[in-house]
Length: 101
Image (cartoon, rainbow, N blue to C red; front, side, top):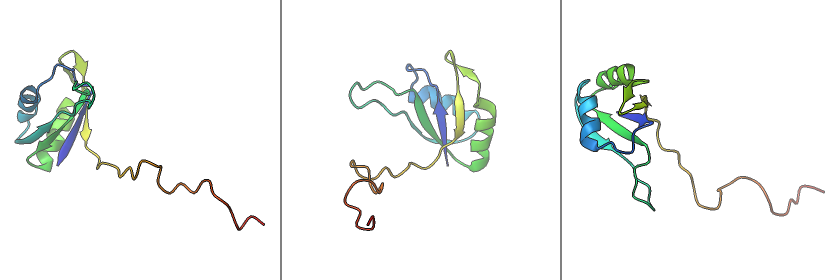
């Protein structure tokens, strides 16, 4: 049970985000991804709640709400896509087509 939180201030902390979501239930974990090169926050995060009901309450209350000078985008997190290898995977392009003639 995870919630995506977008349009976060770059000044946000895990404790501050946890406190906001704690008003709607048990916060199990907060993740704030950082840029690999700069170490700077990327402007979004994930909050894991204790139950789906708590998750739904937080989404309902916080989506579109202003916090730290920004309008939050809050919704149910989608599973991470499998991006495959760095060579583009199976896209069906290139190579010799023996069925052409």
